Every structure is written in structure tokens, then in C-alpha cells.
Image 1 (tube, rainbow, N blue to C red):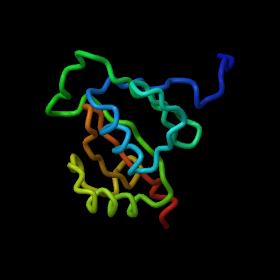
Image 2: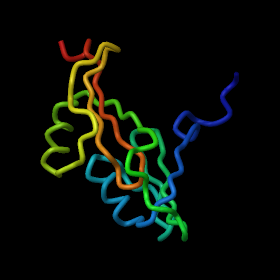
Image 3: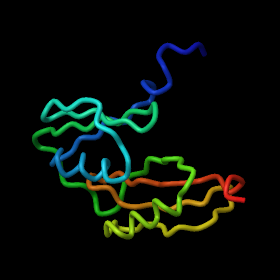
Length: 125
């Protein structure tokens, strides 16, 4: 298939949130940058990837257990692990070397979508 748009604009997650300030602060703590803030809509980015947050009236509270996660690849996963612990993040899966070739961990986000930070094991040697 031929590319229609740049990779960072393809498969963007648009997340409906109850409190856009709380949600955007969470993502910014972990390194997402704000590209656009329109009050009830925000566009965040991680490298070339985008994450949209929309504060929509009537958005239900997040589920007790996340519905999925966004994987963020970083060269220094242990630093993110320390940051998550320092910030008191709800740990869903502690840091560990995984059989699938990553060292990763998962934390709960404020809106029912978790964050998974990961580094390739081969890059840690």
C-alpha cells in the first residue's frame, strides 16, 4: 500500500477524556509535547507520533482495568521506571526483561488507556 500521509499522522489515537487538564499533565510528565491546545481538544506528540485528547461532555469514567496500552519505545526504560515510581504511577506490570525481546513496564493512564515504556533488550547490552 502506498503512503497517503506522513507516518506520524497515520493511526493516531484520539482519546475522549473527562478532564483534559489532568490528562494532558499526565502525558506531559512522561515526555509528550503539546502541539496544539484548543481548550477542550489537545494534540500531543511523541517524536513524529500524535495523540489527540478530546474533553467530551458525557464521557464515562475510565474502566477499572485499562482497555489497552500505548507502547512508547525509549532508549532508557529504567529512567522511565524511576520516574513512574517517583510520580506514584499505578503500576500494572513491573519492569522486567520479556521473552519477546523488550525490557518494559506498564502504568495506568487517567482515562482507561495505559502506557507501556520499552527498550529493546539487544540495545541494553
